[in-house]
Each structure stands twice: as C-alpha cells, then as structure tokens.
Length: 174
Image (cartoon, rainbow, N blue to C red; front, side, top):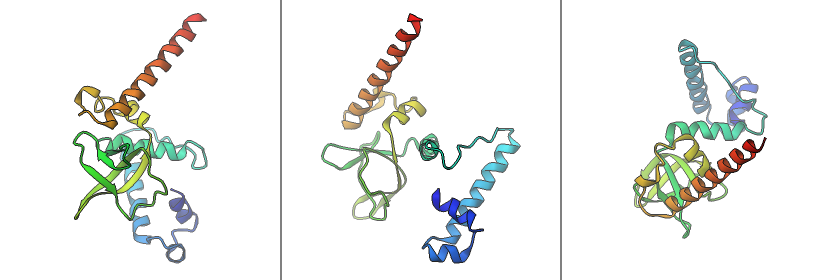
C-alpha cells in the first residue's frame, strides 16, 4: 500500500518505478483493479468507505479484507516452526521470495506452489482472531482435524467468549 500511494503521488511515473525497483506494469494492474472495484461498488449502490491511509488501522483493515476473500487459504505455524495449511494439513513452507521478515503464527496465502517442496507464495501476516470474527462459518471447530491450529482456534474462541461474558456482566451492572 505504501508503494501504491507513492506511485500515485509520483504521477504513476515509469522513471519513479525504475528508480525504486518496482514494476510499473504491476502497479498499473493494481490501479486498474482498484478502479474496477470502485465502478462495481458504485453501480451496485454500495457506499465507498475507506480508512485514511495514514490511520493506524489502515494496514489491519487491508489484511482483514484479504481474509474476507481468501479465508480458506490460510496456514498455521506449528510448534516445530513448520506451517500446515488449514483443514487439509498440507505441510508447506514460505516461498523464498516472501518479503516477511518474521514467521507469523497465521498466514494467508494467494498461491500454493508445488515444486520439489510445497510452498505458499504471496503471503500476509494475519491474526487468528480475524478468522473466527470474519469467517466463523468456515472455522467451526467440529470440522477441523486434531492439530495445533485447532487448539489455537479453541483458545481464541474461549478468549472471545470470556470477553463477551465480561462485557455482558459489566453492562448488566449499570
């Protein structure tokens, strides 16, 4: 997102892309998709609501929107440091081209790449709590095999339930 904003602030300059080692064609494509989504939303009468790009919630909101669309393409880091895809428990590794500087507990991926090893590429760091907030229908625990991801989700559901109970108790006192 920062790159996209800088690209737009520099009038979509090909020279700026070259100097900053980014693909002008990819940024034009992203801009095209953004404009298409904008037109579709207007045609459907859906209100366009955006978080200001300098807001602290901006990047979380972007990643939450990715969870909305790709909630089935999630992997969880196991205690041994390896990742398993959700539901089918496929062992995967982060692709070497991944730009993450750490190994998050939960990742959303766009591509599953099968070479001599299973890789997930184009990944985003996400929070497990977003999964049960955004796609609770898919993250129903009875549908999960026994694994670390299921235990992690169980803890998240318990934490969520405790928070709701505490809020309800506090509200009933007043």
